[in-house]
Length: 142
Image (tube, rainbow, N blue to C red; front, side):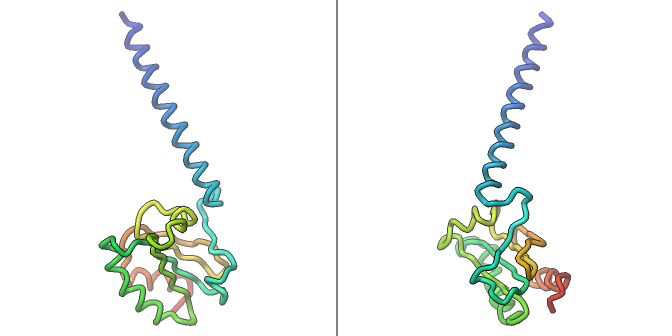
């Protein structure tokens, strides 16, 4: 009679182990697809940032409420930081492959890159103008 609870516990342990293993393997596959083993993204040296300026990439969809609220903020920041930083907005409805490229789990997501293209900060969800300006200031952009 005492062996039944022990077998039950072992069975639960095996199930938990397989779920854990599945999670690890799927995370590893996602890292390989995005080209990132460390979780650090790179904008790279491409046409999106030829001036090698610090960059904010905002990824979202025009249909989500926080994305809609951020749109005018990002448009203002594009003007305010012209020549000092790049503010790039990617609508995932138009460019769905960008979600896996940047490892997006939630929208909107804001990713800050230094002038060399290395990711320095990532935020998921709505980010107000003051917080974005503060992050740029931490990066030396005024």
